[in-house]
Amino acid sequence: MANKKNRNEHMKGFIFSVTSLLLVLTVHSQQIKSKGALSVSAEASLLNGDNHVNGQALLSAGYEFKGWFIGAGSGFDYYKYRTVPVFADVKKYLRKGNRQLFIYGNAGSDIAW
Image 1 (cartoon, rainbow, N blue to C red):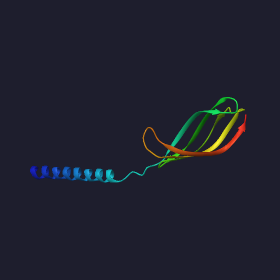
Image 2 (image 1 turned 90 degrees about the vertical axis):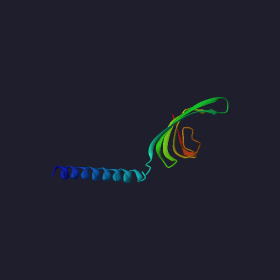
Image 3 (image 1 turned 90 degrees about the horizontal axis):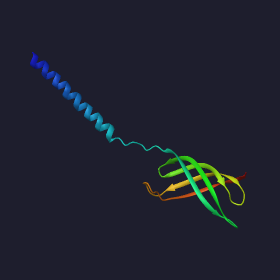
Image 4 (image 1 turned 120 degrees about the horizontal axis):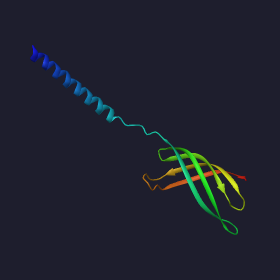
């Protein structure tokens, strides 16, 4: 009687182990859909004007998904006179990794300070 009870416990343990393994393999085999992420981009540049070089600082924030970034930004611009540029920003990343090559375009307006 004890032998039959012991065998039933081993069988239950075996079935539990196999079921758990199959569940893990099933969950692991499903592809995780890539969600986008919020992203922030900072830029500092030099602007060569009519008579001297001035600086510009921009900050844009947006959403990055499958190699694309869409966002909006603002900053400070000291070209000829002080302005605050406000713009929409679109980037396409061409490679993955730490050093990403990208192309971008932005459009907006300058607000006089």
